[in-house]
Each structure stands twice: as structure tokens, then as C-alpha cells.
Image (cartoon, rainbow, N blue to C red; front, top):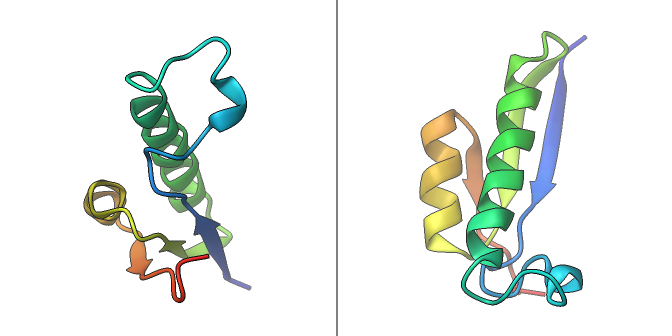
Length: 79
């Protein structure tokens, strides 16, 4: 059996807001992208996962995660 994993990714500028006390706005987008990249890479390396679909409206996240092999779907209606 093969699974399809769906990974929601907020716009990077809004992501990881709970870390705002320790990581400022200049750090959090890169941190959020790194978390998403690690998640997608780990999922794609798993033999039981056939596909990873990323749902995001963030162009940078979409590009970076597609480069790892994930399919990217626009977040409609963006909420």
C-alpha cells in the first residue's frame, strides 16, 4: 500500500508565529521553510509514501518543495 501525504504550509512570513518570542520575523520564514523541507524529504524517503502534496500559497515554499519532488497545490481559498 502506498500513501499520499498532504502537508499544509502557511505563507512563510506568517509561519511559526508561536516562536515570535525567540525568533524574530527575519528568522522565522527560513526556519519554517527548513521544517517543511525536512518533513517533505523524510516523507519522500519513506517506502510507504508514494506522493507528497504540499498545499501552499507561498511561491518560495512551493518552488523549494517541488524541487524535492512534492506536488504543489494552491491553497484555495487561501485560508
